[in-house]
Image (cartoon, rainbow, N blue to C red; front, side, top):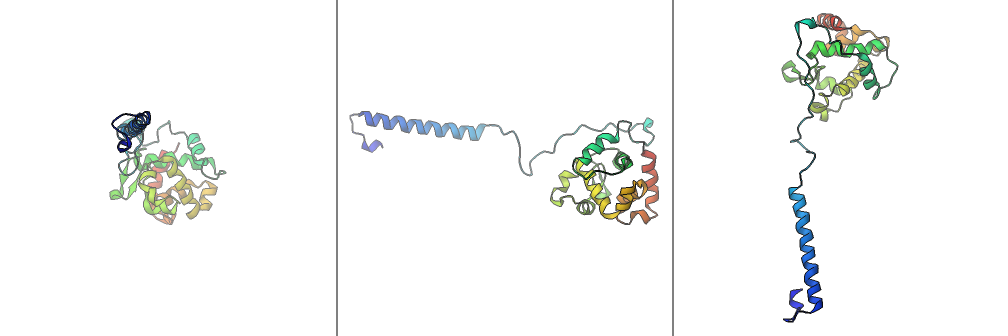
Length: 199
């Protein structure tokens, strides 16, 4: 552009210079916004996990029972939001009892030498069998609502009769011992702990 302008500045040359200066200013502004504007969300591996309110520590007054605040009504509403309804109400009381028995309601709990995670202590094979996305396991297993839906699907797959009947003993044993957990002697002690935490 500058080459077309003679030493005497013409109105056309002035206009060209102003347009060029305007284009440069706009480009500088856009680059500045891209480089210096803070981003509201982080994507990828560097994303920090969502913060959660810490569960209160267990005290001597707890006596091994689930906290009195663990009401099954909100759990039922949350689970049914993503699952077929029509289950016996007793099934929903089992979730806080298992959570308390497994981890004292600690969503960040890790057990079985790193193989089980979350408040319900679910491992990856269980997660996959219950229809959980294995690619999202490490994130979703920390979400109690997603875990409860996975547990329901796991029970529907391996002990549908017990689930429909509200047979809490069988459900707890299968959760602890796998598809044949109800017939394993080793799950008896686990069931007694869960039973003691039922309200």
